[in-house]
Amino acid sequence: MKIKKKYKGVLFSCLAAVFISVPMAFIMVIINHGFVEGFFWQFLKSAIVGIAISIPLANVFIPLAEKVVNKVVEE
Image 1 (cartoon, helix red, strand yellow):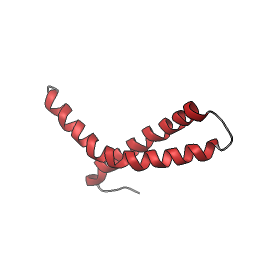
Image 2: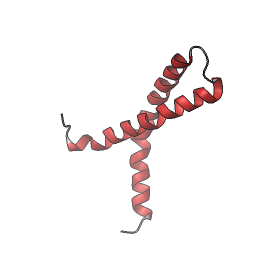
Image 3: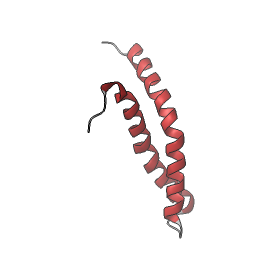
Image 4: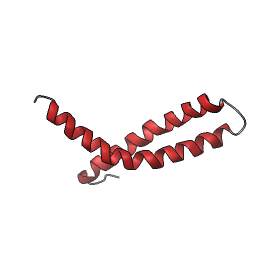
């Protein structure tokens, strides 16, 4: 299944947000709680919250960062 090219940026931002926030949630739960009973549920809750926050932020700030980089980098 393929999606339309116009959605490429949104899909990229969403995937980047998930790929960054899930490992971060895993590491932060280990740092704050360790491998304790209920670890999986703590990790899952943290990952869901992280994804819910990072997807909208990524969809705003990744295109903005791309525009800034394009302005300061020589062709």
